Image 1 (tube, rainbow, N blue to C red):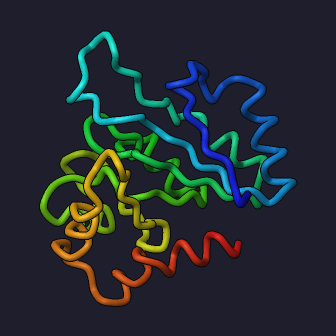
Image 2 (cartoon, rainbow, N blue to C red):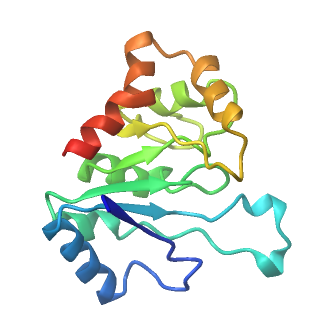
Length: 173
């Protein structure tokens, strides 16, 4: 088993719980990857009663600062009120080495906008080396994720990093 996946909002806990810090410490000791699902599904397709909130990742830089060798990946982190906007986003990008999957990136040229930053939303630039391919299958069609890659203004070396190079480097550590 190369890693674990956490669903805090679905399992009704926050990252501020002391058990989360302990779990991350144990994962680092064992060399495990930790995937953190920021949201379960797109909240726009659910009734308000059945929605699970997005995970508050504001404290993640402090948690990860104590664990310099931990490998963390954010999943389903985009659309709506995403964690990479504003000060929280700047801290996540500048103070951590986490990677982020692109499964929930929306909009024409969305991957390119991630890499260059988006002044309108307050999202700072995200280095291409920190983005990994993600499809969120079976909830989203895989073809849609592949289409995102090719309709974004990425160079061939950038595409190769997102499609496989970054994941290979992340897995090898």
